[in-house]
Image (cartoon, rainbow, N blue to C red; front, side, top):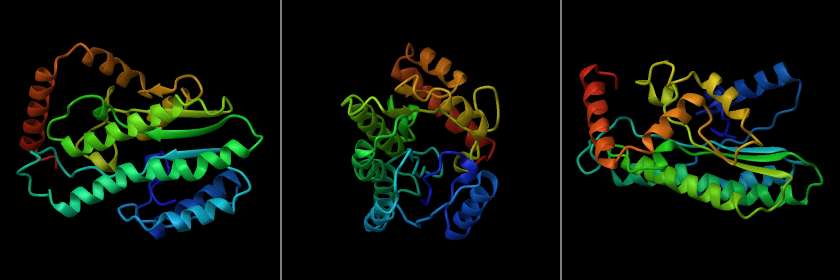
Length: 242
């Protein structure tokens, strides 16, 4: 479904890419695939998704990874990309899918006799702290983090693992200015590490480098984070990484 795959190489932003990925999955893993195309900045896409889900005999895993990010670090009030339409799109895309998709899928999972089912919700470390220059994005990720951990704590069924994954920077096309390093992993490496935590932790940073950063950051006052983000924004602009 659209942009619901966790691994960045399987993020599909048009129907042609989605079909190619479906064919790749069938070819490599010898399974049947079904696709539903959806623009998650719209609110009229969920009926067709629910109809497709209802046709499935069972569901083992839902990965809520739909999302969009701002094109650059910038001031909320004065940046050139901010508009009413952009605000609507990022709020709709980053918050509605996790709420609605979980509402569609979780009741079906609860009726299944199978074990070791999972709902994996991809949040962000930016949802933990005040993040200047990513204000709107971090606010939507705070919603994801809070909804995911709250549903998890409702303890529906021990057979269903509901996990919140809160990455820091990962080197993806969405944030191309983040280059590979010890603290900024390749998406495939990140996914491998994060999946090792499924069933182990309800809430995880997914990668040891991110967990270490988060631990250190927990002792840093917000004022220092503000200046760190200012420095990062200046560095990105200086090196023309946008």
